[in-house]
Length: 173
Image (cartoon, rainbow, N blue to C red):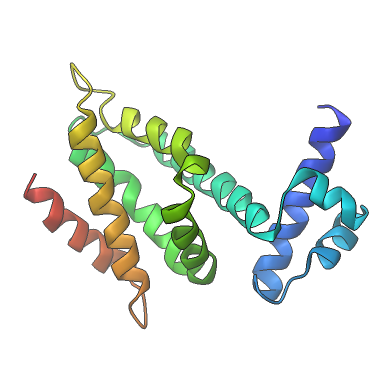
C-alpha cells in the first residue's frame, strides 16, 4: 500500500472513530487531522470537506456489511436477496441514525458519488436470474431507500419494523 493510500485510510479511520465518539456535528476537521497525525491541509487534500469524509466512512461500513452478508446469502429471488441484505443494513442505519440521515439527504442530491455502489448492489440482487431487470432493480431500491427514510423519521427507528415495511412493499412487485 502506497503512502497516499495509507494516509487516506488513517484520516478516514480517525474521522470515523471521532464521529462515533463525539458525533458528526461536534467533530472538527482539525480534530480529525490531529487524531490522524497529519496537517489539516492534508485532510483536505484527500477529502473535499467533512461530509465527504462521512460519505467515505459510511460507504466503507456499508461495503463491509454487504460483504459479510454475502457470505450467508443463499437466496435466488431478487426480492428475497434484498430482504437478506436489508436487515443488517437497517440495523447499521438505525444504530448510526445521525450519520444515516446526513448520508441519505446527501445521496438525494449527489447520487453520482454512490452510483457505482448502487449499480453493483442492483447486479447482486439479480445475480441468480437469467437476465438483469434494471427497472425492477431500481424500483426495489426505491422501496428500500424510502423505507430507510420513513424508518429514520421514527422517534425510535426499529430495523425489524423497517424490514416488515420493505417486505410489504416488495410483495406488490
